[in-house]
Image (cartoon, rainbow, N blue to C red; front, top):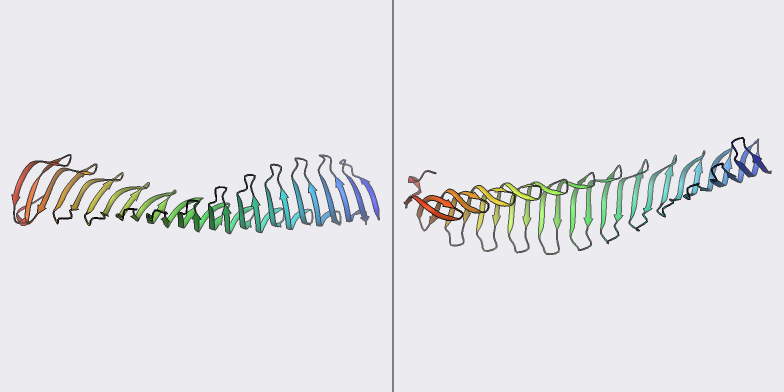
Length: 289
């Protein structure tokens, strides 16, 4: 039976009616000018229907006991939308969210948030595919950047955290530990020219102990601070000679030993220059640093 019914709160219903309730197809207009047009059962929205909200947003899809439940599309007033599964009024299951700028997420949802496995496409062409938790990248995932470089590894709260590998088009590569989107902990960096650093990092800078191998075969093994050789370390030159001692800001500075062709020269260095010779012998056994 078709009926026009005015509720005490000012709502107006027009449609099928039975057992003194909305049952079947009908449209109800609410006091705030929002409206629902669709299926009803026992006075509640059940089945397929469209709800137009007073702020201009709209939900079109399945309902159960007055709640969004099943497949449905929600268009927000700013033009963004979610299209996918719902459960008890929230996004739950598989779904797609498209932002106003056309960036979008496709994947799993739990309690209205990205949760589980999903892929996010950015406006610039970059994309992330992997695990999500409570709306953020959490767990194992891969970020492919628009320039061809990529990061594959662990994430926490939308940031690189844990073990991961970052490769760039110029063939430079970092593999190791991350914290708050930066190299932190132990890791290996291969540079474009073939140089390799393997050691400790703090906030994307070489800090602590590490070994740096140069393309020509020379290397430095020792302490670092803010990306510079700093502290105690050994530098082995291509001709076989070496310096072992103190460093400050990438140059020999302090006490050290220079070894060349069996001659051990102990002295004091200042800004990379030998300023004082303490001893010069052919047997290292007689030298104490």
